[in-house]
Amino acid sequence: MLSGFGKWRSGDRFAGVGASTRTGAIRVVAILALAAGLASLAQAQTTSPGDQGGLGIFAGATGTGTYVQYGERKMLGVAGFVDADGRRRLGIEAEGQWVEFHQSSDVHIETYSIGARYHFGKSRFQPYVKGLVGFGDFNFPYNLATGRFLVVTGGGGLDIRLSRRIYIRAADFEYQSWPQFTFGAMTTLNASAGLRVRVF
Image 1 (tube, rainbow, N blue to C red):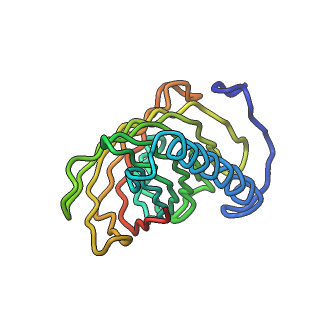
Image 2: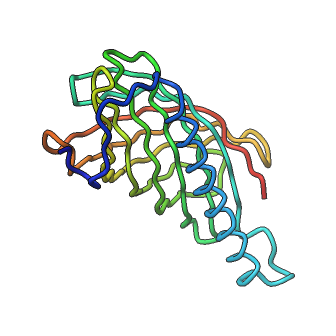
């Protein structure tokens, strides 16, 4: 039996981008909506009428290059995220990643995480660090089995403000640890870039 959260299926025959991705997309939308709702509620409770604009809600998407320790694979994917940044630079990030492209032997990964982030300064250039926790769905070679595992992420990057609402996510780097992976602890490394937009 595959270890992790104890959820696995053998004999699954889905393609690299199929039902699993659609289900994962629904999950991450729910997580992101929850994060945005909590942040919005927090602002309503803590911001006085004369002190608006303290909390910012951002959404974005990136393209991702991923190194997977299992089989030493180099893959490509996409990610979506929501950031809720507070007045004191401490915020929340919720993220979903779909590493589905440049597959070999049908191996692909989806991860869903949420946690804290801290950004430095309010200038045009805004570096940040983050720590996230969540789970990853791993599809083993030739669709023989899938497993769900704990994923712990540490990372950071740089956002560049182009306008009041538009930012370039110039670089985002993540170190992901899969401590309960079937064949022993595994790591994945992600490098991403994309767009970040203020929505509230």
